[in-house]
Structures are given as structure tokens and as C-alpha cells.
Image 1 (cartoon, helix red, strand yellow):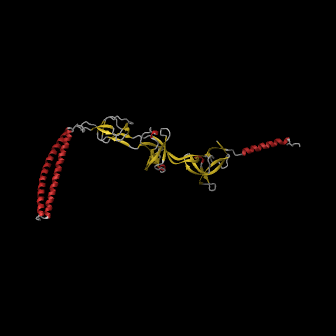
Image 2: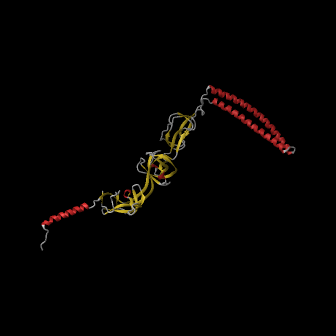
Image 3: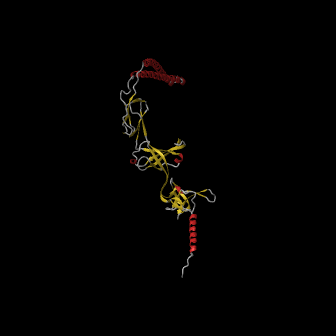
Length: 407
């Protein structure tokens, strides 16, 4: 049977029509949108926030001068080790100054005046002693008469009162005599100690209260010091803790015993820490941008072995990651893939979250239920399986069913 073929005059028009149909289909076909895609995966997930902190010693000892005097040169340097009881500094006690002519004459006059007062006081003591002896004798006779019922009780009480008054007068006279004698002795001591050291040249030693290292040397060269003046600071460098000033809105999420990480402390790796105290009182602090912030102090203990952070010292800067929640195996997607799902019936945002999955080259709007939220990733409880491709940062042009192409 002979095949029939299209007439030659119809072939070209039909080919042109087919070509135009293909071109029209290509022109009307939706072009795929480029999208950044990442797969959902399982792995550890941590919710945390970061803040700066600084190290400080648990116990700091400020060594002060116990008395006024001349401080000898301190040879210890910051960083030097000291042991408990070791002599840290020597102080020559202050020397009595020389008296001018007026002060000397005044002191001599005070001695003469004191001697006169002392003599007068001794006379009063003698008179009071005699009066007290007489009163005691009268009291003894009154007791005998009272026992014989020849003296009334009222009369006896008067005699007893006079005896007590005489004893008190004697005690007061003796106190005046002692005061006058001490005044004379003090003035004579002032004259005797003129220009002399009160310890006869023996310096006063200041020992270390604990073993540790010298943190600061506030005075070095020999110089006069006053009582209570700070000389050195010492402490145990192995007993460090971390102090951080946190925003009050962050601090309320913390509690003693929670874990933290010490990062960017200058050494290799990260160190473990644990919150020991969250101070209840806050304070106002001006930020670098000039904004008033309410902050509070949080104290942490370093739990890593000391050998790992032996290079840390007092008041060193560190960065801290405060761990609020952690899961070892959580199904998670990048936080950039999630958005609030818009209600098509009301036009407002409901409580649900959603994302776009890539299925056979098309975007599929997928409602999800989320769990733990970290800074860059979010846990997915329902709606996505491990390995599903999700679109990051979907724009407004993307719709359910849109063709997508991974970048």
C-alpha cells in the first residue's frame, strides 16, 4: 500500500504553525525562581545569648600600714609569689618631733601645774581618809547601840549614810590624785621622747595574711605613710571567678547552677563555667550608644581544670555564652526559612509558623510546629522530615506551587 504524504505546499505552513505554538508555550510558561535551599537535619541545638565579662579574684587582700611611719622600699613586684607569714613590708614607726621654745615652756608649765594639782589632791585624800576613818568608827559604835536597842533605826541609817559618803569622797579624792599624777607623767614623757623613735629603732614588719601572688604594688620607694594607707594587694590567682553585667531582661532567665561557656578568652578552645549567683539588685548603665540600660551582675565559677586557663589573670576580659536550653538530637531548619503564616480568610496573622519545602522542583507551603528556638536554627516538631529541602528567606513573589531552582 502506498503511503500518502502531505502536499509540499502544506508542509511549510504546518511547520511554521508548530514552531509558533512551541514559542508561545515557552513564552507563557512560568520561569523558575532562584532560591537558596538547605536540608532539614538532626543534631544538637542550643538556645543561648552572649555577653562580655571579666575575671576577678574570689578573695582580694589589701595590705595597709598598721601605724604611721616611714615605709622602707618594697622589693616585691606584681606577679611575685608570697607565702602566708612572709614579710611584705617594713615600716619605721614615726619619730617624735622636736619641740620649739614655746611648746617646751608650755610643757614645763603643765608639769608644774600638774604637780600642784597632785599635791592638792593628796591633801584631799588625807582629809577624806580621816573623815572616812571617823565615819567607820561611828558606824561601829552605832551597830553596838542598835543591837542594845539604845539607838533607833533612823539614827543608825544616818550614821551608815555618812560612812558611805566618806568612803565615796575618799575614792573621788584618790581618783583626782591619780589623774594629776598621770598628767604629770604624760607631759614628762613628751619631753623625754622628744626626737626619739617609739620602738627604739626596731622596724615594724607586715606579714602576708595568706599565700598567693602580688596583684598590685601601690607604693614602691621609701616614703612616709599614714595609718591605714594601702601598700599592696595580694590574692590567690588560682581562685578566679567571672563577673558579667547583664541586661535585667536577660538575667531573669538565669538561675544558679545553669551552665555557660567561656569563649574568646585568649586561649585555645572554650572553657566551662557555671552560674553561682545572680545579684538581686540592678543598676543603670549608659551604653556605648548613649542609651540607659538596666543591668545586674551575674557571678560564675570556672569549672574547667585550672591547667586549661592558667594564663588567665585578674580583671581579664572574656566573652560568655549563657546556655538557656539544649537538646542533643533535634530536627532543625535554619531560622531564615520560617515565617508567620497569613490567614487567607481573615487576612491577618494567626499563631502558626510555616515554610516552603521544595518538592519535585516546586515550592510547597507547609505549616509547621516549632520547639526550641536558637539564634540561627529552630527545632521542628511537626511538618518536616529530616532531609527535606526548605527555602531560605522566601520573598513575596513565591507562592504555593511556584517553580523554583536552587542557586
